Image 1 (cartoon, rainbow, N blue to C red):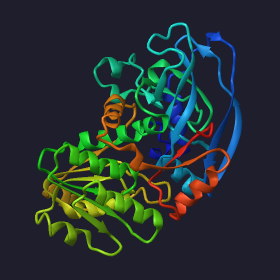
Image 2: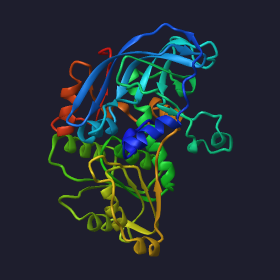
Image 3: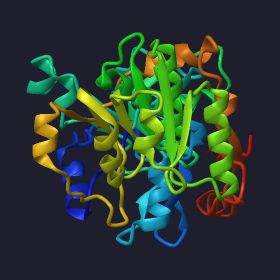
Image 4: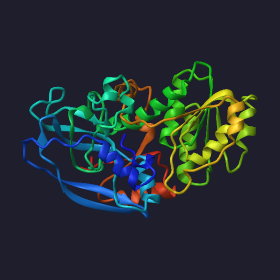
Length: 377
């Protein structure tokens, strides 16, 4: 997932692009599509640009975007990112329109999900059995998922059937949640607290239940907006055993009523400052997994290193690039183990995207996750 939110500045953004594979210059098809695409930055500053897609190289595929989920990354850009406009959207499902001459695994008419960062398969790390360290990834080439068309490498694509486009675009965030749960190493019967009731946190809590956790709780800062109330209500519907509002309750006191020694796993999907709560509720020898980030100055925290050492606390960051778990995520949605309709509650188009995302940021609508539909359906 190409989450620029997970990078802390312009230099890091440039570094990511510099480490990605350059596009091949040999073009087999110079026909270009114009695409309306969305870019954004702080103060809900959304700009629609008309771009020309590049011609196809021999391993490239032209995609018509059918749906693109709105990630917390996109919302953080629109709330906190004050530098250059960033491409919006990377949770993509679409249709193959055209392929390069060496493309073998997809054909025109196929419905596909699009990984925004895919392992190259050819670098020393990939060939040494560590594709998670790949820095020569196939990317979206700077194009937003919130647009009409994309040209990507064949390796970015996963063919799916039996799903509508909107449900299919939940694949990417569900794959991120799968990575978090796998990193946390949740065992049957384990006690788990998820910090942050956003879409990733809610998906993570549901997956922890599916993994057989005996206790799953979730926390949020407040319940004083329509959006917050909606998300906490979904947490209850998903079977969370405890819901903590940290502005109203002491999280340590609330958790230890159920788990007196603390929980064995904490997964932090909220901003980094939430790690302070994680240290308070983790048990001796427990694991804290964290993937929540911040652009608003909350990315640096302090903590008691001595206490972490004496408590034998393991810290495991999660950065789900290059993408993995897309096939597993698709199967979970197809089989109904993850009900996409519970998470994808609102849609928007070019005409009303600013209104819908503004209301999501303000918390004034009962939204879990909005989905952008470039063609209106």
